[in-house]
Image (cartoon, rainbow, N blue to C red; front, side, top):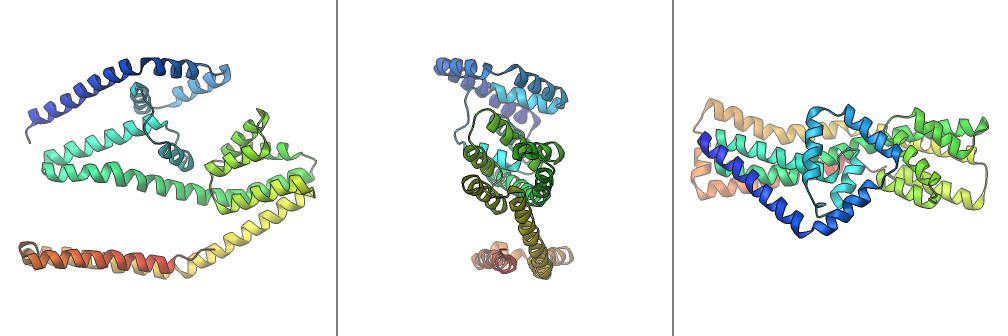
Length: 322
């Protein structure tokens, strides 16, 4: 595709975006006005924090933030907002959509310039629907695994603090100051919510929404029951710490025992692809009948289908829940 056509497409996209945004602003001007007035009703402390965060942002992130503010509506689903919170990504929902659109357009124009428009159109499906979900899934898994390890240390710190004479809230503040993300900042948010008048039940349920893992759910349930029935909280926290550490040891042992199976699944999965590439380099026309015959396409489809089924079965076998 020629360079002039690329520029025409880019300018067409910008033109239609401006037209659409102007029409939306005019149609929903009253609602947007109310939303902006509500957003401006923030405390001075929050404004100072936002200004300090903006100073620390890079030029690219400031530009993304500005583009996100140009979106006059909140995107359709709150599901993505919850996913961003759980993954620990400090982007507003509008900013996240801006990053997605920029990445899709960049990939589309690069592939259209170097390959062809059909591959570029297929890349839109991959980069818009699949890659963001995969990225958030990986980030969420890493963050939740890190939170379980930190939770055991946090419970030990809280237990020792309470034995030294601290209250439960003071021991949580110690953890909030000393522990890194995610436990430290999440505990700090929970403390702020309680100090602002929220109940313990609501604050801890919001904590579970931000960090949804079974170990934290067990800790929250035990703490809420202890508030109703009473008892030695320091001993309870120590018992919970020992339980979580025991679960972590078992998980490490299971992971070690299933390492061979996981490696085998990757080797078995990648071996046919690697072998096909080597054969194609040695004998370039070897696979040509597969792409020029209906039976060849049937073999490719069924082979790919059984390939995916086999990979899923092997991974299902080596994944052991603890």
